[in-house]
Length: 253
Image (cartoon, rainbow, N blue to C red; front, side, top):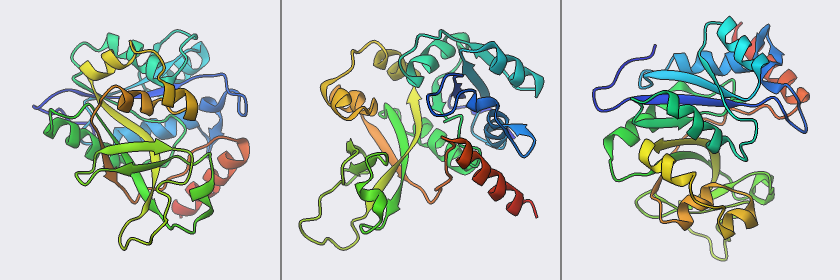
């Protein structure tokens, strides 16, 4: 369950919007009898390093559903260009939050331990602006060349150097122990950095790759990348939701 931390106040925020080109109303799609957003909320409630969890939405139906299952939600503008902008508005309602974790509202099997690790990483190192996560891929995995799969490379101290939809790095030479890292879309921020980030205009590399984390790097941010074995899938289509339901059913027995 959620616990307070003496080092700071960590707020988990789940951005959840109604509109989706591929899957309208996705947050309220029922999986194993519960709305998708409720599954993610319940995972977050298992965390030990989160002081609070909040759903940030632009739709009254999602707002009402979250409150119906006992969660907390805040209404935000429908005009935000990104989930990060939505989170920045939502955090204004929680003045005590010193750190924020952006938890994707469509990952119903997210590992609570990973969320805790991100929170602890931020609390332990005041020099960090952000933290995120990645898991290793085999260089022969088709995902390496898939532009829908974001890759990241890091410095020797584990801080992000670059994110790309292209294969990254390009292996001209074999390097033992060097893995391709698949970026997992979960982010932790210091509050002060998040408030600065949303004031910056979209950056050139961000626009080229359509990856807003590049805006942070282009403005000199320090992003720690945690290696994780969590490969929990997200839900982008009704077909993926059905597959998640089958996975949840199999683990329940």
